Image 1 (cartoon, helix red, strand yellow):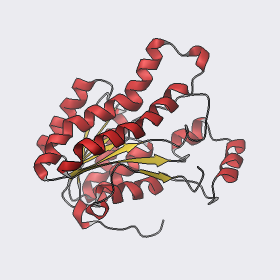
Image 2: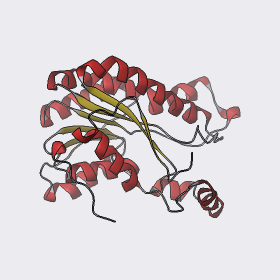
Image 3: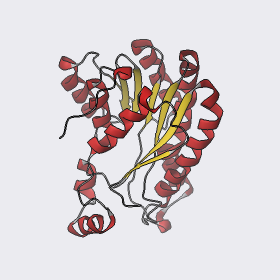
Length: 255
């Protein structure tokens, strides 16, 4: 990995990350801790979350705080944000990363599975933003990064609730950016391509899909979690002070 930028404005900043125990989320936690930020993160995977926090703590300026939380339980999500605020101070960076892209067919989708998919891929992003907005107003500004996906832009099938939810994230971003902009709160969508997380490689990446990636991306390299985290750091830092209501696509030039 090449040398990464250091953002002085992120040192000591209170950052909250959803879905932070594995995949892109774990890399976000690692990279923000390395910036000297005060990181609170949540995930359903208690073992992975605790292990990550323990692994990062010895070398951290601020040891990360992990809480096992189901982000679809809005009361629990609000409680976790309260705990992170109590430990790390008012939250001025929110990374709405948690999602579930399990494949599913139109024929198998029920009203209940639809609602569950929207809850894990969209709903919590709004309520997390709602919960931290007062902190950001009081601080004179902040950054909210909502995580989207190129899947719906590529007309990818096989997961209609996920792709519908992820397309809606960009509408949520633009509406929040308008309403929160007067308080100098920036809201952007970070749109990853097909990132080679352990889950993706284990479940869905085949030789055929690698060929599809090679045909689609302008840069024929595997997209890694660190590529996504690098953009997230920029969007969280003061260096992106006039970036809001935008979609930042990191996909090797696929869409």
